[in-house]
Length: 171
Image (cartoon, rainbow, N blue to C red; front, side, top):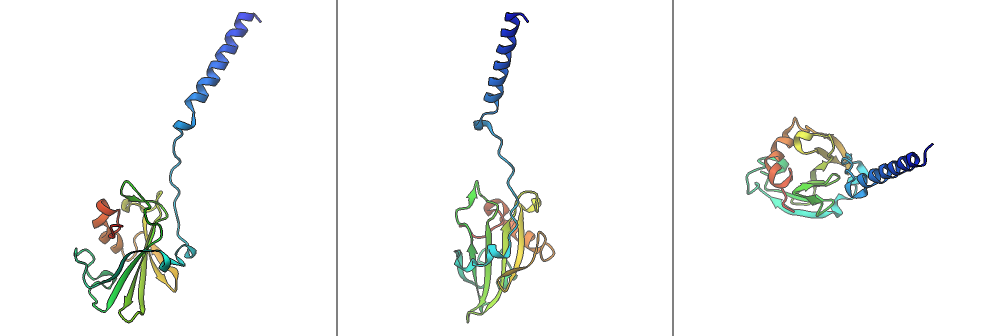
């Protein structure tokens, strides 16, 4: 083999190797798609220790958004909302893994009901920004679905989709 031909092949090989490595540098890595988060009972086990975003709400919602949902028309009920990861937002959207639980307690302290929402993300409930709705019973997720309660959760919370990513609390 001719020395100039060998030199040309080696030069071309080196150029190709360097070009490939520069073109695939870490600065240009494509971000992996966000993983779907599926909440388990353990994820909500201590929700009452989370950040309270709203506490002792009673009576009708002043914005008129929740109607009778969450015992809003019952003057004997206090509602408190707990958030697992405060400051878990980017560009106005909550990150996957964000969980909110709303407790409805009688004014005497008895727990009447608890409901929650979790940002699952990925390809889950894409029409409604990846949110899943669930009912908490005895500290566990008792019922869950994208369209829980015949889609009532999606329908009501969609009124805040553009401002707070389906969450009514501003925190």
